[in-house]
Length: 303
Image (cartoon, rainbow, N blue to C red):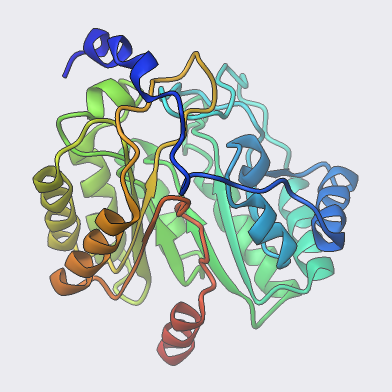
């Protein structure tokens, strides 16, 4: 499907169905996390990506921190994070501030992600590793999940994160093979994402690997299943599948609102294919319920 065909369908999918409704973020915990992040000058992907689960996650005292700034060197057509050129800037005090925030939030599971930093030689991998190190030093029992960019599949960068001490490392394939050139930045590549996930597992078989699919771009069911199979071939353990929600009119339009029954079907198929955990639903995002009881139990038993 061409870009023009997708944009011609813009006006056909404007009204959201009843199951696509999110509530406004409220509550004391939400205010506490919001104020804490501003106080420590930290970014959360919850805010930057306009995540629909921000009320639920922040209300329960969970957040996903976004390190390495808030300017991405790539410009995927579905993503609400701003793009530009950070010109090599790195705040080396950021890992300590993240660790401080984690301690104050009294968490037992934390997700760390970042923008793409193609302007850095290692893509920011060393900052990921340092962030895990200081978090673990300050909070020895915490489980850390990393959601990483592709680092251009650089082996040295992948070694840094694979051996950082994080229990879970995710990299999102985002969409099916056919739609990758339309949906993702030209520097992103379907096979490269699979290579990243494969390499992480080879570098450290003890970690759990994770990936995420966004649906609603015009993919077919068999293409979603094909992508699940591709992920299982590289031994991905955890999978999340969620609905694309258009952040603004400058982003790629929604082609379809996938119904809850189809999401349930994808979950069942994923489990049959051998994923250890599948979260599939309209509001599911890559870090949604990352610290779910089942996942935490699985990780605890693996230590």
